[in-house]
Length: 63
Image (cartoon, rainbow, N blue to C red; front, side, top):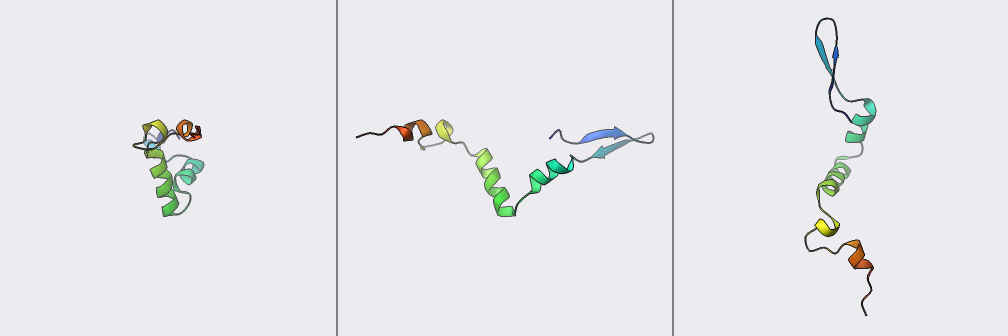
């Protein structure tokens, strides 16, 4: 998504929203699903997570 684009009209400037596909992608699903998706994007995981093992640590079997 490139954001808001400006197009010249009849002597002035006009602001236009992102295309329909980008808007649908941002607003798809119910509010709960959107909040879970946003949480997953901003929450660090793997080595960046606090007190959480990453996938490589989980794959090592210790006897």
